[in-house]
Image (cartoon, rainbow, N blue to C red; front, side):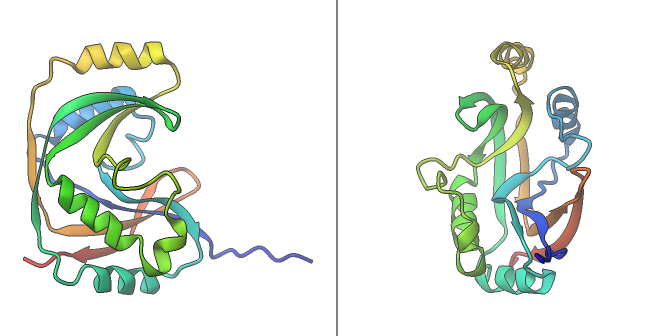
Length: 183
């Protein structure tokens, strides 16, 4: 008889930026992102993976890999449409902090998380972003992009914490582990 491991969890490692004007992002996501009511606006560092790693193992890995990593400034101000084999999206892309995000992602995809790195993810393909919309039709993507193309807002913050979420069966985000960056 095969015994299923009940300890397998779906997780993502991300940054939850704290923007003063986050209400603009929330309004766009409410319209166009099916996950808007399940997870706060975020920037993904380690894409969703399934494992039976414990919270303690993940926290120790993060603490080890984040040694010497300081808080950093992040700013975003450009909404783009993305249409590729992985899907159709509206992205808010980074203006400042791109290399910091890439470095964090690369460091986290080592050791116990190395087996979970997607084959398509590399320094050339990784575009740090915040997803504002997810679409199943190109028409809907084009209409949404036209709708938000006049938004010229800038979003800035200091990133000082990395979060690990568990994604439950309803797609809701439950914070599992948080690790602060050095000040």
